[in-house]
Amino acid sequence: MGETGKKIAVVFGTRPDAVTLAPVIRELKKHDQFFSLCIVTTAQNRETLDDVLTVFTIAPDYDLSVVGLRHSLSSLAQNILERLDYVLAVESPDLLIVQGDTVTAFASGLAAFHRKIPIVHMEAGLRSGDRSNPFPDEGYRRLLSRIADIHFTATGAAAKVLQSEGISKADILCTGSTAIDALHHSVQQNYLFSNEHLAESVHQKKRIVVVTVHRQENLGDPMLRICAGLKELARIHPFVKFVFPVHLNPAVREPVFEMLKDIPNIMLLEPMNYAEFVNLVARSVAVITDSGSLQEEAHSLGKPVILLRDVTEQTDALKSGAIKIVGTDIKKIVNAGSIILRKKSPPKTRFSPSNLYGDGLASQRAVEFILKYFGFTKKRPNDFRPTVH
Image 1 (cartoon, rainbow, N blue to C red):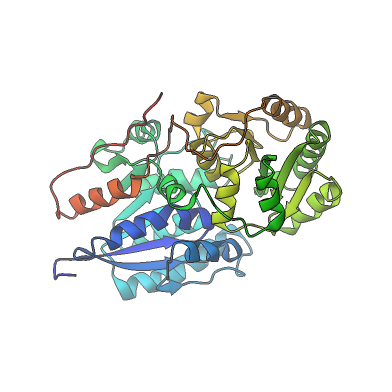
Image 2 (tube, one colour):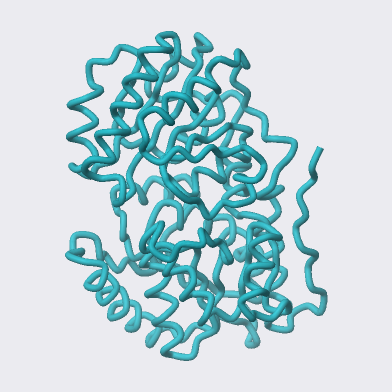
């Protein structure tokens, strides 16, 4: 890197963070004459993060190891602030990149703000319209929008939200989602599953529904209702295979295994690595989830989503009809699932021809914008515009 080069810190703490930022890291490395990288993980969710680092060959320069220190969101944020502040003091980056709406993203952005380091917010502009739902995600992404300098959005609608909140259009670029770049890298037509039961189900062309549940607001009684809905849906559709990688949180595992372990067409698995999981989603007929990022990934793979939440920040997919919000109401889960499963469409692995979220070039657009921000190029990249058929 030449004397005029810039140092960029990239910080992540969860699997969705790492998946979304991995293509950006890869693209930045192509411009090593301009940029040096300082890659930092907080390891906020160590148990699901490390396999992504392996898939995308990412070696962090700093591991803050805040996992195991969490007693509350405030104490977790405090630990990230203190440990990252040390890194920022040592490295003095010219720019910090965070993504999404985790405590890692917000606390890292705040640490950079305190040191007057410009902040890039990836996946900016998502809004559910309810500050407390999903919590604390909605609050974190709103707060990040107030201190970030560059805002990269997945959709034009998200860009318009930011403009309506007073952020200059010059500081916003609709890149599309870099998580879709990661999908293009990871989904393979001839993928070989390491889990023999999955491999057999795929080989036999079973109709597969992928299930994930992990959100804090769905613990307790909501989790019991979700399990009851899944149990009834599996009974009504005995020839459908429901594949459920179960989160490591005991508040998820205990009711799930107690209520669903003896259902013959429900396959309860340990958490799956990223590559295996997205290739499974690609071969499914539907997804039942409370995840934010999976809504986007599933839509981009052409899979309908039954959403176990009361609101969603993915308003574009909601308007398109790709997402059906059911909350944790047992009847709604069963009815929405049955409507999808009565259709006899075979599983497909091709990307949806109508893609709201990206074309695989989002990270390229983001890095081109950063090049312009530092004056290494004069041309601003064009905004991503989905091709709708």
